[in-house]
Length: 307
Ligand code: ASP
Image (cartoon, rainbow, N blue to C red; front, side, top):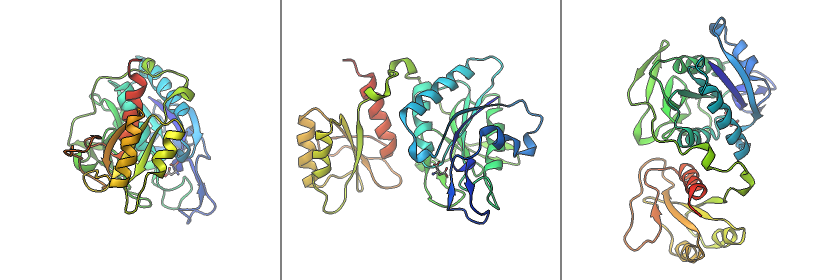
């Protein structure tokens, strides 16, 4: 089994063990994280540091490097699965991207922590232990996230709380399973699908199209849409209230942007629920995707569109 480190709070250090908020993420290496879990001693685990960052700063070059290393290791006959340690802030984005691009037939198990590695009551070691356990399951496949005793599919996982240790949910779909005393009680199927393939994305991330998210709210106007057009943005996700509704002033700006060739999809800013097409509204619904998932989906759509 291979464990790839990318940083995050799981690798963070606080000034004092009682302080769960003021800490620096991404301070200790992935091998050290494994060494701190005595229950994993004696397991055959290969550690590799792919990146070392606070996931708020996640970028496309790290996504690509991670995808390449995962693909490399999963091709090995002696590797049953890969575990990835990551920050909680953007875990759902990296996991979504990798599931859509690689749709791996072996398990790729993300894990993270809400508290730093030296916190009094740290959650990282248990999460890492559980993640290794899930990556060892024979029939497991696809990208999942293991946190606070729950397994989430990559296409559903989202951070739903800014502070609680149990900070992740899977929206309307519900969790894929629960880990109880080292055993997985599986409730749903493993993630599956047809991989888009890394080779179709283009390795020069500076050439990837700009896709941004705009939130609808009381009093919203077209200023951000105008700015996006000026900056060469190729697509916009509108996170509107309720059924992805669009304020009439924002709608006017978006219609203008659409005429200029920008792709525009509607999502909801509600925590859960789908968005349905609305008669007379010319912007497609992104279905049940959250705004950040829809943004990745649009990015992939633009990257793989025929010229
Ligand atoms: N800012 C941190 C990160 O995403 C938060 C965490 O890991 O919990 O890297």
